[in-house]
Image (cartoon, rainbow, N blue to C red; front, side, top):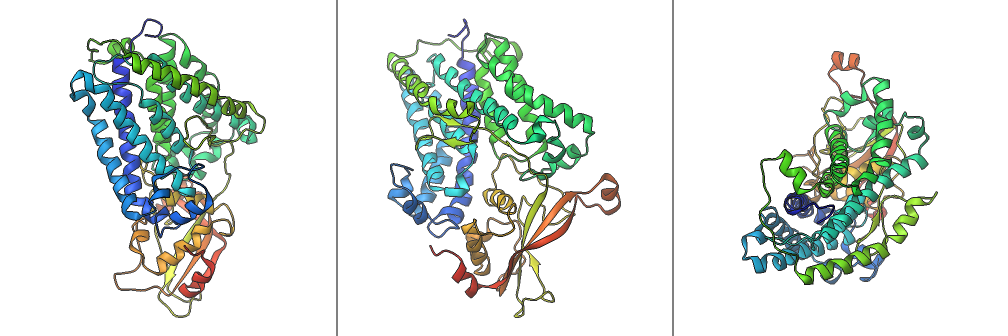
Length: 486
């Protein structure tokens, strides 16, 4: 117990939320990993193996760099996650519930570690490390009638603190717009993947944007210190954090970053708080087994020792965001949107079946699920699902050429080859079965939201202007000389 509180209900709710996110993450891996980072992916598995040793980035796919193993691991993760969602360890006799739970959560963590460490650029997001760090701690929560170890909840609150406080600090140190309270003037328009509400949020009054930017600083820099306070202050901080993350989920597509933060915020509650607001009651519990208590104390010592570098980074003037300091992603540093882009650039990829790839050719546009390619198309709701290629295209468009994006030319090769796995990552391929494009090109545009008056007149959500050619018309043969070979 902590401050006289109990946490059986908190554990049960936390585990279900985390299991749902694991399920989602493994489904993303099942549908996308082989096209992105598999044997013949945009960033092939062998590039991962050549770029790091197993000790530096341990993964099952270092030992077995095979797409069949990737598929087996992904779908095994889906099945095990579903078992965790259904609380299968709780169905077992009391003596077996906790050991079975530990094996289940440890297997999920090890499997997902393999995807993150081998996924290269397409798995280089802060929420990957946060899912692994959270998932590792979940191994030691126990199950069944066993009273959950309180220390684990403190460690989960520590993850939540570093996530929120690190994000607050990097904003103050980063972009001037966070200090003059103007960042939200740009955020909804320039975020990686806007959603249907983003356009409306962008057009809220300037006074609202100033207030929400100031509120962002309060929630990220002050509220986190209450996570460790006695109840009900800790729960109050958790509710504020959940409300903040809920607003971000309502107005944008940030994969499962917000959802995972909400799940972590559950650790700020207690059974007494949950019983006061929900029609539930905790069952009778039994003492935490000594082997679990001893293991948790050891884990806490390790986490505290490994927290030194993340804390030093968090307090440093040269703070780095979203970094793992160990190959197992046990204790990481976090921080999102230290700077906000002021202009939105998009790369529009097109292909043609014409032999002469000039401006008179019939250029057909590839459509990605999360990209605002068609100005008249309403921004979609994607999150908490994660469109990894769409996210990387957002980063790629910030630069005028794909020179630092080795996967981009391979993407064009795959599109001209009509590669089925690659095409499965798109919302629409503009060629019928049997049609073979002869050339591809990529145009760079600046996108801006339409004004309410423009949208009323045209129905468009965006207006755009061409600002350059990202890749000039190129044939498959020419691309194969540019694209790095697998």
